[in-house]
Length: 358
Image (tube, rainbow, N blue to C red; front, side, top):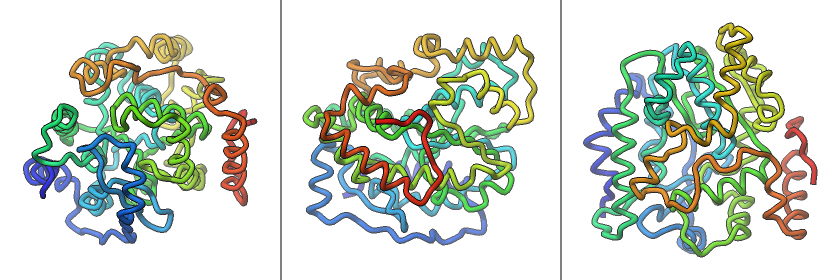
């Protein structure tokens, strides 16, 4: 049975992503391995029916993606880039939205009026939005209907603009993006302490209703550390970016550093884009980006999704804005388990997260 995405692929994706494709199409170079029925059944049990049903692992790092991503992998890999396209990249729940607002304002002359009127989802293309959730055509439950509405909404939002520069958000690892990306384009990547990421990602999946009401955090944590959540494995994703930290077109940031020294890191981002901010401008931008102001900012907090019933009302997209909340969710056994997992994945690398301690 075809999914609603197949229809969208003909009617809308072909107009958007095919425009993104180059005339010289490169073959997608990575092997795609679909989960066995038994493994998929175990993972998919926590997901709401009619949203994500099948999963695949992509390439040597075995990035975990919905099976529907297979339809888009080559098109995304062959994205026709413009020299002034600007990318914000991350694993989910690492401060991406915060960074998007910062990057957009710096590159739009601190136009706060426009930023408050136009939703961030309209200012930034979410590159792979149409490849991450498959809704079965004919599914009649209320949640499936709302996700169709959400996909159509994003399809309208992310039609590639003709104006430049284009601002593009992605949670894909660098290896699944166009191989020439860093030749000409600026990319800002943000990473975060993995235990906090797991907690935030759990609540995000609850908010967006990607997972049902049954799994507790411990169940989700098991999937997270076993790289059975979308865009995982976490460490390989971050390590790919870390290896590019000295590239002139790449800026690597830590969420914890922004929390500790917002002004200093705002200055770093401005300098990366060749922008000069006065002291007064720096103060104003940092004030705009404080957590209290950011949480109240309707242009970035996806309030329209909650009002439409696409996201649940039991939560908020901008949740806490702090570091170390994982301690409220990990029992002693999970803490020891996480310590081993982190230690194993940081072996043979100089990647270290700020203020990481047990």
